[in-house]
Image 1: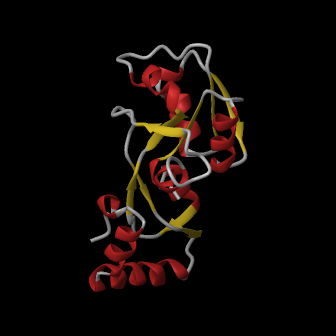
Image 2: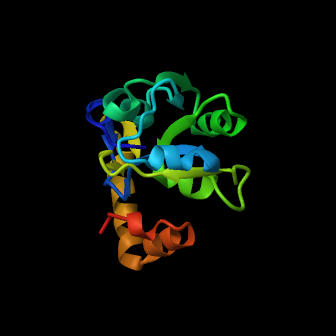
Length: 166
């Protein structure tokens, strides 16, 4: 999950292992509108998973100020909303978008638009506060890095450029 100050305060978090950011998912035919310099998105319906980093991005980024935001249950629902035309855009994790949209998926009509001004994030694994599992998982992440297995897994899923655990 995305490591945030709120998550860190409420849980024990593993070593961060992937870099992530939020992206805007749109129908391919609408991509140009979102990629325009200073796009005017006023009046558009934008969805994101409730209580997610996507929701935080919609609420904090100026580009979404004139939009209508509708929370949904999860990122998969956000993709369905855009694909079906009930929303103009979704804000989801870039990592999730890599395997969920485009050619070879159920959402081949969708594409990701990257906004450089969106703040980067890191993924970690959350546990109950002071869990004895957190140190064990950190040790496993370290072993995966040292053995090269994490790099192999990341390469298989097109994530090698996002690995930050060293």
